[in-house]
Image 1 (cartoon, one colour):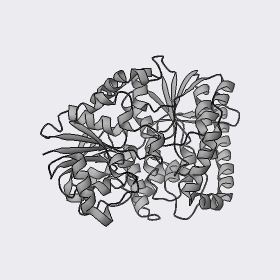
Image 2 (tube, helix red, strand yellow):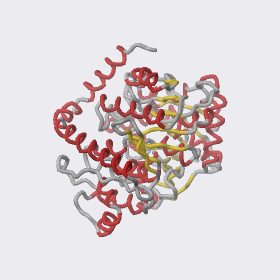
Image 3 (cartoon, one colour):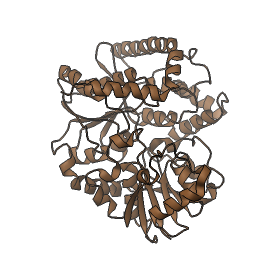
Length: 470
């Protein structure tokens, strides 16, 4: 049977390539890789197929096609074939050139364009490549009943210390953990071929992972700017000097070009990558001593796949700002908070650090998933969890209760903290209370602003064209 692979990101394409190398598709006939860019404005940035080194990754497939080009001017994230399935079936069948029925391997099962493609091609087995940490939690929407019987297996890296994603536990789907070594081999091969497009062969002390939490996420552009400034302060506080910042590919570029001045003040030599270079390629080529971010899958990949020290910054702040209990970022934030080093910046500029936490992560994630599906319904396991680990209350907000939430209980440090640590903890809690009061006061205004994504994107574009490059 022929096989169609649909890859929206380098990480997805690399995982699919690793699966092919591992012999998981040894019985497949023709293999076609379909690339798709989910960026808000794909025309502004090079797609996956245009990245240096892509040819080495693509050699495992018989040909490559672009979904963006095939359905243009439709955008993959908004395209719906519902009104004319037969016409889209003809167009896409001609584009991929496969004999039906064929297998489909894709990412982000409950989201577009995956749901649209599965509607156009209603037959054949479906493999899912994990969409990062979110797949350890509940799916945002149930798997359509027409799709569920087609599901065959979930392919994923181990990004959470053996935690089992939700899909294999709720459906009769094989749980296939990809080899970290095989994944690193794919990335290394790609990076070697792309060496001319990489930021050079110099080692980096630290890599800072840009986040996109304001385009459609819980932070305002100003708060996202503050978060990235905190990343740099953490890098300096940890003693690093050579720092590379890789902005999120989907993020609008304004904020990244306002950071060099702060870097100079902190004594950092900062390189901001304007061209898209996958974070995994940077890990392989630059061999950083540390990776700093908030809660992205790339941060967990650095720790779990590459063995690099990872530092999570701003987890509590983002968690507090999630607009509803069902937000799919809740589980990734919990996994990051538990398994990675946690760093905050005190008012005097000192770092407040905490290592990974000893807790039953599967139980925590299961209870968060239960709360996401049934807000306000506390199980007996959750009550026991909260009694033993009071700080986990931050993961279980009541629907509609924002202003009345209690201050976040700090995670206990290993050993008995001294006076300095207690004072630092007290300052941290005070900052969180003040921050929450400010945020709640402006919540209604921000919600009104968020209802118009076009306005926010236009504002970010305006900021982008006004920056002065250094």
